[in-house]
Length: 434
Image 1 (cartoon, rainbow, N blue to C red):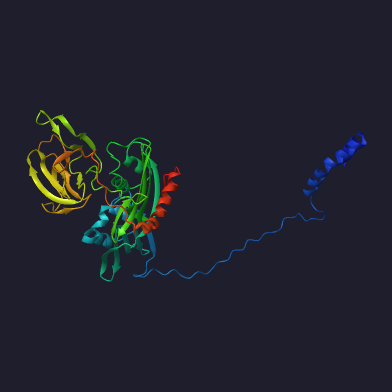
Image 2 (tube, one colour):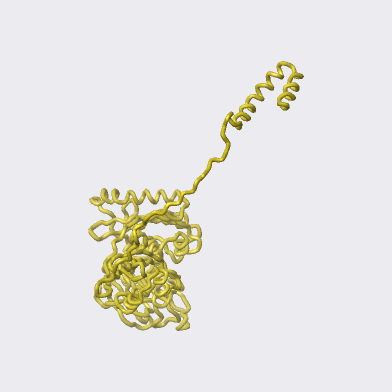
Protein backbone atom coordinates (compact mmCIF):
# COMPACT_ATOMS: atom_id res chain seq x y z
CA UNK A 1 0.00 0.00 0.00
CA UNK A 2 2.82 2.38 0.88
CA UNK A 3 4.62 1.60 -2.39
CA UNK A 4 1.43 2.21 -4.37
CA UNK A 5 0.80 5.57 -2.59
CA UNK A 6 4.32 6.84 -3.31
CA UNK A 7 4.02 5.79 -6.95
CA UNK A 8 0.66 7.62 -7.18
CA UNK A 9 2.13 10.84 -5.73
CA UNK A 10 5.01 10.64 -8.20
CA UNK A 11 2.74 10.22 -11.21
CA UNK A 12 0.52 13.19 -10.15
CA UNK A 13 3.45 15.53 -10.76
CA UNK A 14 3.63 14.48 -14.49
CA UNK A 15 1.66 16.28 -17.21
CA UNK A 16 -1.57 14.53 -18.27
CA UNK A 17 -0.18 13.09 -21.48
CA UNK A 18 2.82 11.60 -19.62
CA UNK A 19 0.46 10.04 -17.06
CA UNK A 20 -1.44 8.21 -19.83
CA UNK A 21 1.79 6.88 -21.34
CA UNK A 22 3.02 5.72 -17.93
CA UNK A 23 -0.25 3.93 -17.32
CA UNK A 24 -0.01 2.07 -20.63
CA UNK A 25 3.57 1.01 -19.90
CA UNK A 26 2.79 -0.13 -16.37
CA UNK A 27 -0.33 -2.10 -17.27
CA UNK A 28 1.50 -5.32 -18.37
CA UNK A 29 3.63 -5.21 -15.26
CA UNK A 30 0.56 -5.37 -12.99
CA UNK A 31 -0.60 -8.35 -15.04
CA UNK A 32 2.66 -10.14 -14.41
CA UNK A 33 2.49 -9.39 -10.71
CA UNK A 34 -1.08 -10.67 -10.60
CA UNK A 35 -0.05 -13.85 -12.33
CA UNK A 36 2.29 -14.67 -9.47
CA UNK A 37 -0.33 -13.96 -6.82
CA UNK A 38 -2.29 -16.51 -4.82
CA UNK A 39 -6.06 -16.70 -5.05
CA UNK A 40 -7.95 -15.75 -1.84
CA UNK A 41 -8.93 -18.51 0.65
CA UNK A 42 -6.34 -20.95 -0.89
CA UNK A 43 -5.33 -23.70 1.55
CA UNK A 44 -1.55 -23.91 1.74
CA UNK A 45 -1.15 -26.55 4.45
CA UNK A 46 0.93 -29.64 3.42
CA UNK A 47 -1.13 -32.60 2.33
CA UNK A 48 -0.36 -35.70 4.42
CA UNK A 49 1.41 -38.52 2.53
CA UNK A 50 1.13 -42.16 3.56
CA UNK A 51 3.61 -44.81 2.30
CA UNK A 52 2.03 -48.14 1.48
CA UNK A 53 4.18 -51.26 0.87
CA UNK A 54 2.58 -54.37 -0.58
CA UNK A 55 4.20 -57.70 -1.29
CA UNK A 56 3.53 -59.25 -4.70
CA UNK A 57 3.33 -63.00 -4.98
CA UNK A 58 5.60 -64.28 -7.79
CA UNK A 59 5.63 -67.79 -9.20
CA UNK A 60 8.64 -69.87 -8.03
CA UNK A 61 11.67 -70.01 -10.39
CA UNK A 62 12.06 -73.47 -11.84
CA UNK A 63 15.53 -74.66 -12.88
CA UNK A 64 16.02 -75.10 -16.62
CA UNK A 65 15.72 -78.67 -17.76
CA UNK A 66 18.47 -80.38 -19.77
CA UNK A 67 16.99 -79.60 -23.16
CA UNK A 68 15.83 -76.02 -22.49
CA UNK A 69 18.24 -73.19 -23.37
CA UNK A 70 18.46 -70.29 -20.94
CA UNK A 71 20.85 -67.68 -22.39
CA UNK A 72 22.16 -66.72 -25.83
CA UNK A 73 25.35 -64.69 -26.09
CA UNK A 74 27.50 -63.48 -28.98
CA UNK A 75 31.12 -62.32 -28.88
CA UNK A 76 33.41 -60.91 -31.56
CA UNK A 77 36.84 -62.53 -31.74
CA UNK A 78 39.59 -60.10 -30.69
CA UNK A 79 43.31 -60.10 -31.33
CA UNK A 80 45.15 -62.15 -28.73
CA UNK A 81 42.12 -64.28 -27.91
CA UNK A 82 42.56 -67.93 -27.00
CA UNK A 83 39.78 -70.45 -27.26
CA UNK A 84 39.60 -70.64 -23.47
CA UNK A 85 39.34 -66.85 -23.06
CA UNK A 86 36.63 -66.71 -25.72
CA UNK A 87 34.55 -69.39 -23.95
CA UNK A 88 35.04 -67.53 -20.66
CA UNK A 89 33.69 -64.29 -22.18
CA UNK A 90 30.74 -66.27 -23.53
CA UNK A 91 30.22 -67.56 -19.96
CA UNK A 92 30.47 -71.20 -21.01
CA UNK A 93 31.35 -73.31 -17.96
CA UNK A 94 31.37 -76.79 -19.47
CA UNK A 95 34.59 -78.88 -19.33
CA UNK A 96 32.95 -81.66 -21.36
CA UNK A 97 32.04 -79.25 -24.17
CA UNK A 98 35.51 -77.67 -24.13
CA UNK A 99 37.14 -81.12 -24.43
CA UNK A 100 34.83 -82.09 -27.29
CA UNK A 101 35.56 -78.89 -29.20
CA UNK A 102 39.27 -79.34 -28.59
CA UNK A 103 39.38 -82.96 -29.78
CA UNK A 104 36.81 -83.10 -32.60
CA UNK A 105 38.34 -82.81 -36.06
CA UNK A 106 35.51 -80.78 -37.60
CA UNK A 107 35.63 -78.27 -34.75
CA UNK A 108 39.28 -77.37 -35.40
CA UNK A 109 38.14 -74.37 -37.47
CA UNK A 110 37.22 -72.68 -34.19
CA UNK A 111 40.87 -72.58 -33.19
CA UNK A 112 41.83 -70.33 -36.12
CA UNK A 113 40.18 -67.45 -34.19
CA UNK A 114 40.13 -64.95 -37.03
CA UNK A 115 39.73 -61.45 -35.49
CA UNK A 116 36.46 -59.78 -36.38
CA UNK A 117 34.42 -62.93 -36.76
CA UNK A 118 31.75 -63.77 -34.22
CA UNK A 119 30.83 -66.83 -32.17
CA UNK A 120 27.30 -67.27 -30.84
CA UNK A 121 26.43 -69.74 -28.07
CA UNK A 122 23.32 -70.80 -26.19
CA UNK A 123 23.85 -72.06 -22.65
CA UNK A 124 21.79 -73.29 -19.75
CA UNK A 125 21.58 -71.33 -16.52
CA UNK A 126 24.47 -73.36 -15.06
CA UNK A 127 26.79 -72.48 -18.00
CA UNK A 128 26.48 -75.84 -19.78
CA UNK A 129 26.70 -75.49 -23.56
CA UNK A 130 23.53 -76.16 -25.55
CA UNK A 131 24.61 -74.94 -29.01
CA UNK A 132 27.37 -73.00 -30.74
CA UNK A 133 27.42 -71.26 -34.13
CA UNK A 134 30.55 -70.06 -35.95
CA UNK A 135 30.73 -68.68 -39.48
CA UNK A 136 33.78 -70.22 -41.17
CA UNK A 137 34.08 -68.65 -44.61
CA UNK A 138 30.89 -69.45 -46.47
CA UNK A 139 30.05 -72.37 -44.17
CA UNK A 140 28.24 -72.28 -40.86
CA UNK A 141 29.78 -74.53 -38.20
CA UNK A 142 27.10 -75.79 -35.80
CA UNK A 143 27.72 -77.63 -32.50
CA UNK A 144 24.63 -78.98 -30.69
CA UNK A 145 24.17 -80.96 -27.50
CA UNK A 146 22.26 -84.24 -27.86
CA UNK A 147 21.58 -87.37 -25.81
CA UNK A 148 25.00 -88.79 -26.75
CA UNK A 149 26.99 -85.65 -25.99
CA UNK A 150 27.59 -83.24 -28.86
CA UNK A 151 27.32 -83.29 -32.65
CA UNK A 152 29.13 -81.10 -35.21
CA UNK A 153 27.64 -80.19 -38.58
CA UNK A 154 28.72 -77.81 -41.33
CA UNK A 155 26.24 -76.28 -43.75
CA UNK A 156 26.30 -73.50 -46.34
CA UNK A 157 25.46 -70.20 -44.68
CA UNK A 158 22.38 -68.32 -45.84
CA UNK A 159 23.95 -65.21 -47.32
CA UNK A 160 22.49 -61.78 -47.90
CA UNK A 161 23.77 -59.85 -50.93
CA UNK A 162 24.25 -56.10 -50.56
CA UNK A 163 25.33 -53.56 -53.17
CA UNK A 164 27.75 -50.97 -51.74
CA UNK A 165 29.35 -47.85 -53.18
CA UNK A 166 32.60 -46.07 -52.43
CA UNK A 167 34.75 -43.24 -53.73
CA UNK A 168 38.33 -42.31 -52.88
CA UNK A 169 41.35 -40.32 -53.99
CA UNK A 170 44.83 -41.65 -54.64
CA UNK A 171 47.35 -40.25 -52.16
CA UNK A 172 50.15 -42.79 -52.50
CA UNK A 173 48.86 -46.05 -54.00
CA UNK A 174 45.67 -47.82 -55.02
CA UNK A 175 45.76 -50.09 -51.98
CA UNK A 176 46.38 -47.12 -49.71
CA UNK A 177 43.30 -45.37 -51.12
CA UNK A 178 41.09 -48.44 -50.79
CA UNK A 179 42.26 -48.96 -47.19
CA UNK A 180 41.40 -45.35 -46.37
CA UNK A 181 37.92 -45.84 -47.86
CA UNK A 182 37.42 -49.10 -45.93
CA UNK A 183 37.38 -51.22 -49.10
CA UNK A 184 38.57 -54.84 -49.14
CA UNK A 185 41.79 -55.64 -51.00
CA UNK A 186 39.77 -57.86 -53.35
CA UNK A 187 37.98 -54.76 -54.66
CA UNK A 188 41.30 -53.01 -55.34
CA UNK A 189 42.55 -56.07 -57.22
CA UNK A 190 39.41 -56.18 -59.36
CA UNK A 191 39.70 -52.47 -60.17
CA UNK A 192 43.29 -52.98 -61.29
CA UNK A 193 42.28 -55.97 -63.44
CA UNK A 194 39.37 -54.07 -65.02
CA UNK A 195 41.46 -51.13 -66.19
CA UNK A 196 44.80 -52.90 -66.66
CA UNK A 197 44.60 -52.69 -70.45
CA UNK A 198 44.17 -48.88 -70.36
CA UNK A 199 46.10 -47.92 -67.22
CA UNK A 200 49.53 -49.18 -66.25
CA UNK A 201 49.17 -49.30 -62.46
CA UNK A 202 52.94 -49.70 -62.14
CA UNK A 203 53.76 -46.36 -63.77
CA UNK A 204 50.67 -44.29 -64.62
CA UNK A 205 49.19 -43.60 -61.17
CA UNK A 206 49.36 -39.98 -59.99
CA UNK A 207 48.54 -38.32 -56.70
CA UNK A 208 45.06 -36.84 -57.02
CA UNK A 209 43.69 -39.59 -59.28
CA UNK A 210 40.18 -40.62 -58.19
CA UNK A 211 38.03 -43.70 -58.46
CA UNK A 212 34.44 -44.68 -57.70
CA UNK A 213 33.19 -48.23 -57.40
CA UNK A 214 29.89 -50.12 -57.04
CA UNK A 215 30.40 -53.64 -55.69
CA UNK A 216 28.69 -56.58 -54.00
CA UNK A 217 29.29 -57.95 -50.51
CA UNK A 218 27.90 -61.10 -48.89
CA UNK A 219 26.69 -60.97 -45.28
CA UNK A 220 25.43 -63.51 -42.76
CA UNK A 221 23.50 -62.08 -39.80
CA UNK A 222 25.21 -58.72 -40.38
CA UNK A 223 28.71 -60.22 -40.56
CA UNK A 224 30.80 -59.85 -43.72
CA UNK A 225 31.43 -63.24 -45.31
CA UNK A 226 33.11 -62.46 -48.62
CA UNK A 227 33.70 -59.77 -51.20
CA UNK A 228 31.63 -60.11 -54.33
CA UNK A 229 32.02 -58.79 -57.83
CA UNK A 230 32.68 -55.19 -58.81
CA UNK A 231 29.57 -54.19 -60.76
CA UNK A 232 30.76 -50.82 -62.03
CA UNK A 233 33.75 -48.54 -61.60
CA UNK A 234 35.16 -45.26 -62.80
CA UNK A 235 38.85 -44.34 -62.63
CA UNK A 236 40.08 -40.82 -63.36
CA UNK A 237 43.76 -41.09 -64.24
CA UNK A 238 45.70 -37.91 -65.03
CA UNK A 239 42.44 -36.13 -65.82
CA UNK A 240 41.09 -38.81 -68.18
CA UNK A 241 38.04 -40.79 -67.08
CA UNK A 242 37.71 -44.54 -67.67
CA UNK A 243 34.39 -46.21 -66.89
CA UNK A 244 33.28 -49.85 -66.94
CA UNK A 245 30.14 -51.84 -66.09
CA UNK A 246 29.71 -55.59 -65.73
CA UNK A 247 27.30 -57.39 -68.09
CA UNK A 248 26.35 -61.06 -68.36
CA UNK A 249 26.33 -61.60 -72.12
CA UNK A 250 25.48 -65.30 -71.68
CA UNK A 251 24.59 -67.69 -68.87
CA UNK A 252 27.41 -67.74 -66.31
CA UNK A 253 29.53 -65.62 -68.68
CA UNK A 254 30.18 -61.91 -68.34
CA UNK A 255 32.70 -59.18 -69.00
CA UNK A 256 33.31 -55.48 -68.40
CA UNK A 257 32.23 -52.96 -71.01
CA UNK A 258 32.32 -49.22 -71.49
CA UNK A 259 28.92 -47.50 -71.29
CA UNK A 260 28.68 -47.49 -75.09
CA UNK A 261 29.18 -51.27 -75.26
CA UNK A 262 32.88 -51.51 -76.12
CA UNK A 263 34.59 -54.48 -74.49
CA UNK A 264 36.99 -53.13 -71.90
CA UNK A 265 39.10 -56.24 -72.00
CA UNK A 266 41.81 -56.30 -74.62
CA UNK A 267 42.99 -59.65 -75.90
CA UNK A 268 46.13 -59.18 -73.77
CA UNK A 269 46.87 -57.72 -70.35
CA UNK A 270 49.46 -54.98 -70.18
CA UNK A 271 51.13 -56.76 -67.30
CA UNK A 272 50.97 -60.40 -66.14
CA UNK A 273 51.45 -59.32 -62.50
CA UNK A 274 48.86 -57.59 -60.35
CA UNK A 275 51.25 -55.13 -58.71
CA UNK A 276 55.00 -54.71 -58.95
CA UNK A 277 57.51 -52.31 -60.42
CA UNK A 278 59.40 -52.34 -63.72
CA UNK A 279 63.04 -53.03 -62.87
CA UNK A 280 64.28 -53.18 -66.46
CA UNK A 281 62.54 -51.96 -69.60
CA UNK A 282 62.51 -52.88 -73.27
CA UNK A 283 65.75 -51.66 -74.89
CA UNK A 284 68.31 -52.49 -77.56
CA UNK A 285 71.24 -51.86 -75.23
CA UNK A 286 71.36 -52.87 -71.57
CA UNK A 287 74.30 -53.89 -69.38
CA UNK A 288 73.49 -57.45 -68.30
CA UNK A 289 74.10 -57.77 -64.53
CA UNK A 290 75.11 -61.44 -64.75
CA UNK A 291 76.92 -61.66 -68.10
CA UNK A 292 78.61 -58.28 -67.48
CA UNK A 293 78.20 -57.21 -71.11
CA UNK A 294 76.02 -54.93 -73.19
CA UNK A 295 73.18 -56.64 -75.01
CA UNK A 296 69.57 -56.04 -76.08
CA UNK A 297 66.80 -56.60 -73.57
CA UNK A 298 63.77 -57.69 -75.58
CA UNK A 299 61.29 -57.82 -72.75
CA UNK A 300 60.14 -56.22 -69.49
CA UNK A 301 61.44 -57.21 -66.07
CA UNK A 302 59.01 -56.86 -63.16
CA UNK A 303 60.57 -56.95 -59.70
CA UNK A 304 58.33 -58.84 -57.29
CA UNK A 305 58.70 -61.09 -54.24
CA UNK A 306 59.39 -64.77 -54.80
CA UNK A 307 56.12 -66.68 -55.13
CA UNK A 308 54.09 -63.78 -56.57
CA UNK A 309 51.41 -65.13 -58.89
CA UNK A 310 52.01 -64.81 -62.63
CA UNK A 311 48.90 -64.56 -64.82
CA UNK A 312 48.33 -65.48 -68.44
CA UNK A 313 48.28 -62.27 -70.49
CA UNK A 314 45.58 -63.69 -72.77
CA UNK A 315 43.59 -66.77 -73.71
CA UNK A 316 45.88 -69.36 -75.23
CA UNK A 317 47.57 -72.75 -75.23
CA UNK A 318 50.73 -73.75 -73.38
CA UNK A 319 53.46 -74.24 -75.97
CA UNK A 320 56.29 -74.83 -73.50
CA UNK A 321 56.59 -75.32 -69.74
CA UNK A 322 60.00 -76.29 -68.41
CA UNK A 323 63.58 -75.14 -68.03
CA UNK A 324 65.38 -73.37 -70.86
CA UNK A 325 68.85 -71.81 -70.62
CA UNK A 326 69.10 -68.30 -69.23
CA UNK A 327 65.32 -68.08 -68.86
CA UNK A 328 65.41 -70.68 -66.11
CA UNK A 329 61.91 -72.00 -65.56
CA UNK A 330 59.91 -70.78 -68.53
CA UNK A 331 56.30 -70.81 -69.76
CA UNK A 332 55.47 -69.94 -73.38
CA UNK A 333 51.85 -69.37 -74.39
CA UNK A 334 50.56 -69.22 -77.95
CA UNK A 335 47.57 -66.98 -78.61
CA UNK A 336 45.74 -67.55 -81.89
CA UNK A 337 48.34 -68.03 -84.60
CA UNK A 338 50.75 -65.10 -84.50
CA UNK A 339 51.02 -64.04 -80.85
CA UNK A 340 53.22 -65.64 -78.17
CA UNK A 341 54.03 -64.52 -74.62
CA UNK A 342 57.06 -65.68 -72.63
CA UNK A 343 57.39 -65.82 -68.82
CA UNK A 344 60.89 -66.48 -67.46
CA UNK A 345 62.92 -66.91 -64.20
CA UNK A 346 59.96 -68.64 -62.52
CA UNK A 347 60.22 -70.36 -59.16
CA UNK A 348 57.57 -72.92 -60.13
CA UNK A 349 54.55 -73.69 -62.28
CA UNK A 350 50.84 -73.77 -61.49
CA UNK A 351 49.31 -77.21 -61.04
CA UNK A 352 48.66 -79.00 -64.33
CA UNK A 353 50.79 -76.61 -66.40
CA UNK A 354 51.96 -78.70 -69.37
CA UNK A 355 52.22 -78.45 -73.14
CA UNK A 356 48.82 -78.34 -74.84
CA UNK A 357 46.87 -77.09 -71.80
CA UNK A 358 44.39 -74.30 -72.56
CA UNK A 359 44.50 -71.28 -70.25
CA UNK A 360 42.27 -68.23 -69.88
CA UNK A 361 43.30 -64.62 -69.58
CA UNK A 362 44.13 -63.84 -65.95
CA UNK A 363 44.57 -67.49 -64.96
CA UNK A 364 47.55 -68.16 -62.69
CA UNK A 365 50.17 -70.10 -64.67
CA UNK A 366 53.34 -69.78 -62.54
CA UNK A 367 55.14 -67.97 -59.71
CA UNK A 368 57.92 -65.37 -59.63
CA UNK A 369 61.41 -66.67 -58.94
CA UNK A 370 65.10 -66.14 -59.73
CA UNK A 371 66.02 -69.20 -61.83
CA UNK A 372 68.34 -68.94 -64.82
CA UNK A 373 70.45 -65.82 -65.32
CA UNK A 374 68.87 -63.69 -62.62
CA UNK A 375 70.38 -61.77 -59.70
CA UNK A 376 67.12 -61.64 -57.73
CA UNK A 377 63.45 -62.59 -57.88
CA UNK A 378 61.64 -61.01 -60.81
CA UNK A 379 59.57 -61.90 -63.86
CA UNK A 380 61.02 -61.58 -67.35
CA UNK A 381 58.08 -61.05 -69.74
CA UNK A 382 58.22 -61.03 -73.53
CA UNK A 383 55.53 -60.29 -76.13
CA UNK A 384 56.11 -61.50 -79.69
CA UNK A 385 54.14 -61.09 -82.91
CA UNK A 386 55.11 -63.61 -85.61
CA UNK A 387 58.26 -64.29 -83.61
CA UNK A 388 59.34 -60.64 -83.49
CA UNK A 389 59.81 -59.05 -80.07
CA UNK A 390 57.50 -56.13 -79.26
CA UNK A 391 57.46 -53.74 -76.31
CA UNK A 392 54.42 -54.97 -74.34
CA UNK A 393 54.00 -51.52 -72.74
CA UNK A 394 53.76 -49.75 -76.09
CA UNK A 395 52.32 -52.17 -78.64
CA UNK A 396 48.67 -51.62 -79.64
CA UNK A 397 46.65 -54.46 -78.13
CA UNK A 398 43.80 -55.95 -80.18
CA UNK A 399 40.37 -55.49 -78.61
CA UNK A 400 37.89 -58.18 -77.62
CA UNK A 401 34.46 -58.28 -79.36
CA UNK A 402 31.98 -55.52 -78.35
CA UNK A 403 28.29 -55.86 -77.44
CA UNK A 404 26.30 -57.14 -80.40
CA UNK A 405 23.29 -55.28 -81.80
CA UNK A 406 20.99 -58.03 -80.49
CA UNK A 407 22.35 -57.64 -76.95
CA UNK A 408 22.40 -53.82 -76.94
CA UNK A 409 18.85 -53.21 -75.52
CA UNK A 410 19.36 -55.72 -72.67
CA UNK A 411 22.83 -54.30 -72.00
CA UNK A 412 21.50 -50.74 -71.67
CA UNK A 413 18.63 -51.84 -69.45
CA UNK A 414 20.81 -53.94 -67.11
CA UNK A 415 23.63 -51.42 -66.72
CA UNK A 416 21.65 -48.15 -66.51
CA UNK A 417 21.38 -48.28 -62.71
CA UNK A 418 25.14 -48.86 -62.32
CA UNK A 419 25.90 -45.83 -64.49
CA UNK A 420 23.52 -43.69 -62.42
CA UNK A 421 25.30 -44.72 -59.21
CA UNK A 422 28.66 -43.75 -60.70
CA UNK A 423 27.20 -40.36 -61.66
CA UNK A 424 26.05 -39.95 -58.04
CA UNK A 425 29.49 -40.84 -56.68
CA UNK A 426 31.25 -38.46 -59.04
CA UNK A 427 29.36 -35.56 -57.50
CA UNK A 428 30.11 -36.46 -53.88
CA UNK A 429 33.08 -36.34 -51.52
CA UNK A 430 31.97 -39.37 -49.53
CA UNK A 431 34.17 -42.27 -48.58
CA UNK A 432 31.52 -44.98 -48.77
CA UNK A 433 27.79 -45.57 -48.99
CA UNK A 434 25.69 -48.62 -48.17
